Image 1 (cartoon, helix red, strand yellow):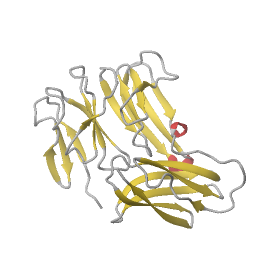
Image 2: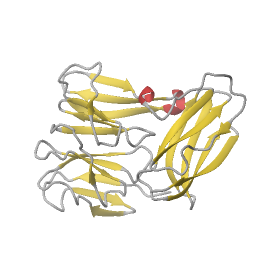
Image 3: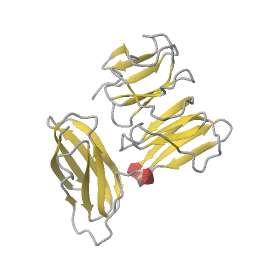
Length: 266
């Protein structure tokens, strides 16, 4: 079992004393690349990928608000994009699509569908000018296919939103006829760079898992792990964080398992 990865914000703005990461049994200072003189407000981790995390900068001292790491904080990349210079409070990652992020600020919620290149307001149903003090999530995918973002506000109560239907990767459903058997189809395009689509068919409603592995057998992504309805579905795989090479994707549903290979060429 891999050792835990822990991010500790030290409450300091001094270089070398801002963010410590407990990685493989040792503490490291890993704040290289952050704006000078700014404290780290919080670090949000991905639900299943221990290499992936997001550091949020404190206050209004810098327009660079959100940084992403894919190697446990060894290096960070600014993904603030066009997000306004507003104090950020927390961030939730989408469970299956790393390009989709939801961030709470002192001026409401924002969302990106392209990994932080651009952000849009995500306040539908909320009061205008709402102050988001914290964010969390409820993962009930295995029970009912739902994933909820929950926000706590300053004086405006607690709000919850189901983002399962917000998922562009799942739910392209073919209603042209009944599906008679399980089928995992070849991804398209193949080779691909950096995204491709994987289509699969389910003759019955069942729990579906689709995982991606590299040539060594190491798991690099979990695309689906939830109950899906009978029919034909499509899931999108984004390999922008991976190196060129051959990869394998495996579908498991009940007693059915199938594996196919795909090539990422950058």
